[in-house]
View 1 (cartoon, rainbow, N blue to C red):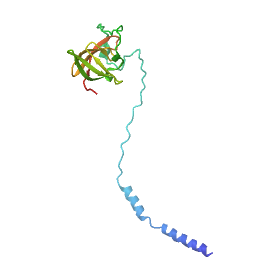
View 2: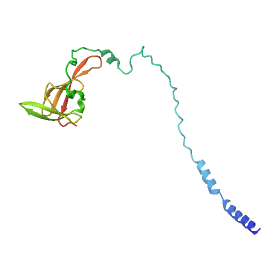
View 3: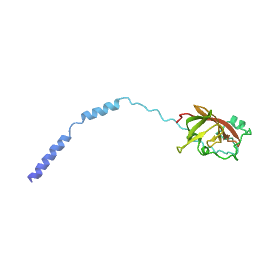
View 4: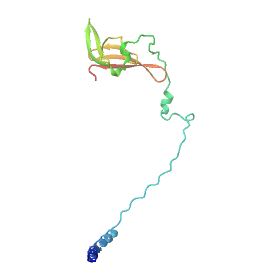
Length: 170
């Protein structure tokens, strides 16, 4: 019985500590409510999405300007790759994978030294072919090997473009 009275007394003492005045809390809430509130701008109204069905057979290609589509005509300039010519070893590699690593002068003729992706060094001179675009070596100098390539113009014909392998270009 004494233990029950003791527990009841301890409980009353504990609860009396919780009944402390909440006046400071009420004052804080009242002051906060008195302060001017900031207003948030309302969200803008969004225009509903309008779907569009594209009929390609009626309209022009949206990725080509009107001037380009009118000017785009294939012109046959007579340039074509020689399909009958026997391919040389360096024609199996893209031009950007070949490196000019030096030159060799022999009997007053400059030979270019080209390293293939497999590490093999090849001797070339003007007239040899290399690269995947029917590239023909025009000249070999100490700084570079000048090349003429024949590439497709995208309209069914071929055009000639200049390229070069530069000494020490990584």
